Every structure is written in structure tokens, then in C-alpha cells.
Picture (cartoon, rainbow, N blue to C red):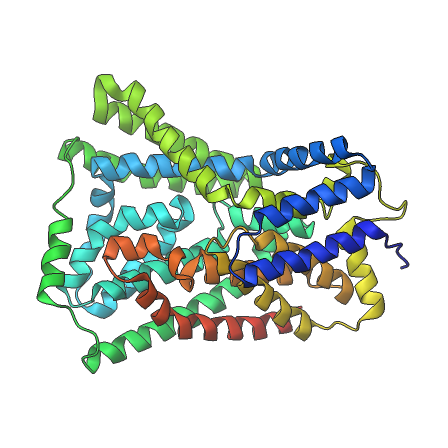
Length: 465
């Protein structure tokens, strides 16, 4: 297939490399993306006013594409806040505490519980939901706070966030950039997420047990006392009986959601809407029960708090996503029909041109996507650069002739494990803060397990393509 590349294609490719360079230098890429959008608009339209309008319209386009994801995360954070303040989270988690008898059980139970809750609540709220309850229990049986932080971080910000099967924020971004259905990315990610998760968590556990055995890591008396004290600092604004009722009802409501998704075959936006609507009603009902006459104001307060969190997380993502949406159908929608008549979009055209000039293969493609994904995660977001990973995956998948979904999933996993995150210290703050440990120490302990996990996962991806 012959494609016509014009100046727009080369400018777009140039800015991909510039954005990548900024991420390697650990600098924010938002300004570069805005400049890139402006230049693409100006070259296409030859109009200063149209190109300025194009920047704003590209933001609108990106927000429209992402608003469902932003809202689901926002309402879930709002719901998580009211559950934490009322102590319902403690009641939901407390049955699991009796199974925590030793450091090994503490590590695996906390980790698996964190993973499951993170699929529905997202990792940052989930850390708050379970950390304050299970930390003192784990410390009591001999698992140091750093071990608790590792378990919550690897299973939550690693496995759960990189897969994001329920909320589907990550696969939404990458699938859009790659121009493939979200279901294809999720299907391709399942074996990769499993391999990455097992490799990383087992290695981390082995290193943890080794350090506990040789005495390099142990629970100090002061650490135990502080952890226990943290668990006593809950404000009691709801009766114990009410907390028990909600602790039973809330998991049942989400379980019903899962059943409905399976029976009605709900995916993507429909599945997200079901989870989001359920979270809103839980927030409302719990707020009314807890705050009585003040519930009307408190409901708004919780929603606002959630929205602030959602836009704080996605604020840096919007300019980057806006740029990469121009690589596909977004260009015509935002700027206009200025591409060659036989064009399939900037990224597709570049992919075909690459296939015609460079003999790419699954090995080179997989290694490159892992590296690109990791680099995009260096900003500590994990999300701001996964659109780039999706675009590169589309580029390479087109050149290879297959494997776009696998490459997209691989780039997504690499970006989020690095920056979402388990390696970048400033992305580890939620787990580190709850457990009162140094985020740099947590990142250091995660380094070898996560690196080995990425290598093994990349090898598996090569054979999957």
C-alpha cells in the first residue's frame, strides 16, 4: 500500500520525538503538545485564528472523549471519602483481619484485597479505604510498614491500575490512541497482566522474606504503637449497626453490577456508567444516613471533592491526549479535512510508511513499546503518556501487520507500572503516606521485581504477536 506523506505527517512525528524527549528528561510535556497542536493547525489551515481555535477545540475533543472516565473516577473517590469518614470501610475490611496470622498471610491477603478493591475504587482511594484498617493488623503479626506499602502498591497501583478491567480508564486512553476497540486491548492485556503481576509480586515477596529472615527488616516497637494509634483516630458519625448493614449491602450492590454486565454483555462506557451510577447512589444513601439534615450540603461536598481529584489526575493528561487524538480521526474533527485523499490518519499513514521502509518484527516492536511505555511513566502519572504508547503501538502494529492490541496492552502495562506507579517515587506517595514510609525506599524495593517483571512480560508479548 502506497501512502502520501506531507509536512503534517513529519511535524506530527517530530513532536512525538520531542514529547518523548521531554518525558525522558522528566519534564512536563503539556506545553510541547499545545505547541504541536498549534503548529499542525497553522500548517493545515494557513490561518492564525483557526490554529488558535484548534488548540481550544482539541482540548474540548479530548475532554469529550475522556469525560466518562474522569467522572467515574470522581464519583468513586467521592464515595470512598464518605465510606472512610463513616467507618464503613473498616467494617467492610474487618472480616479479613482474622485471617492475617503471620507476615506471609498479611502480604498476600492485603495485596489481593487491595487489587480487588482497586478495580472498583481505583488504587488511591483504595489505599485509604484499607490501609488504615489493615496496617496495624499486619504490623502486629510482624510485617513491617514497608511490606504493607509494597503489597498495596504492587497489587493496587501495579496489577489493578495497569489492567483497569472495571473502570477501564487506562484501556480507554490507549485503545483510542491505537484506533482499536477497548475490548481488544483488555483481552490482549489479560495474559500480560497475569504474567507481570505474578512475576513481580512473587519476587517482591521472596526478597521481603529474605530480609525478614536475616534481620535487615523488622517491626520496631515504636512502629507497632504508631500503627495501632492510627486505627483509633476514626470519627464516629454512624452507629455500628448501620455500618454493618452498609458493609454488607455495598459489596452486594457491586456484585449485582458485575452480574448485570455479564448477563447484558455491558462493556466500555455502558459498564462504566453502571458502576458510576451505583457509586453515586451509594454516596447519596450513606450521606443521608450519616449526616441527616446536613446531607444535602455534604453530598455536594463529596462530589466536589471527587471532581477535584478527577480533574487533578487528568489535568496533565488532557493536553497530551488532545495532541495524540489528532493522530487519528480527531484531526478531521478538530482541524478539518486537510490530509491527503488516501490518508487513513497521521499515525496509520506513518505506520504504513514505516512498514514499507523498515523491516520491523515482533521482538523489536515489543521491546520498543516496553521502553516507550516506561519512559512515558517517568513523569509519575502513568496516564499522561499512555496515549503516546497507544499511538506507537498502532504505528508498529501497522508496520508488522498484526499485534496492535498486544503492543498497546504492553505499552499500557509498562507505563502504568513505572509511573502509575511502582517505581517513580512521587507516584508512590499515597501508599507511602498511609504506611508512613519513605517513598524512595519503597521505590528502591520495587525496582528489581518490577524490572524483572517487565522483561518477562515483554518476552511473553513477543510470542503473542
